[in-house]
Length: 334
Image (cartoon, rainbow, N blue to C red):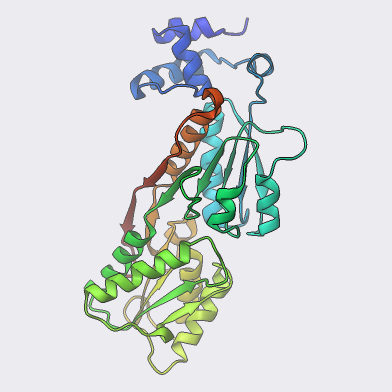
């Protein structure tokens, strides 16, 4: 016979309501209590009757996740964490790739057709804050990243200014004096590159070091080939850098590749710091020094925001602005 909700409650020593809250995520539960309930669920092999629950609640048990690039290591890792966290709440995740296209983002955020998902988590790249604020999504919404919709939706992000300043300051403290930045993206509205540029400049200003436009290289995307190309341009310029802060680990890996091709030693001749702490960077040659956002917390907080909103009567929960921690992970490139 399959286990029931009350069997889990008895095993964990809690009420049926507490087990239901853990399974659905409809109310906060203390960490120790959640752990005991999850252990009981695993030991008993309990599986909620999602169809019956959805019919009773008028919900589908499905949420949407919209990210710009499925092939991006950062977004791939984050998507995996979000799916795992959603599974703990007995939710199924539908994943959509937007390619940072405004029409694709707009379509997902505009009411239309039948209701397929109970809520949506999206990392918007193309829509500007004014349009985001003006949209009226048909389902509860959580934004990832820097698109601030003027406080009209929940948002989970990293402090990119502080993180970029910390990365740049690390290079300054190593004695580097010609520090370049790879990753400015004037063609995008998402704000990430703008904030990381601001942090880079603040660190230079605090150290009394001059800014040079030639040392700030724009890229079309945040991929390895863009980083390799930008590093080649820097090394061909009159003022060759002795350090680079790249706005993503992919850019940093491309930059290190070009440095090696040019016969430079990393970090002896040129130091490199990335951003994202993707798995590839940990196994680079040498391993990549990087800013590591707490991706687990991004997933947990985004799902909790969505749960709060989905289970809120009349969607009355005030929008939240949540900043997750980051840390500088020092490895072999700087």
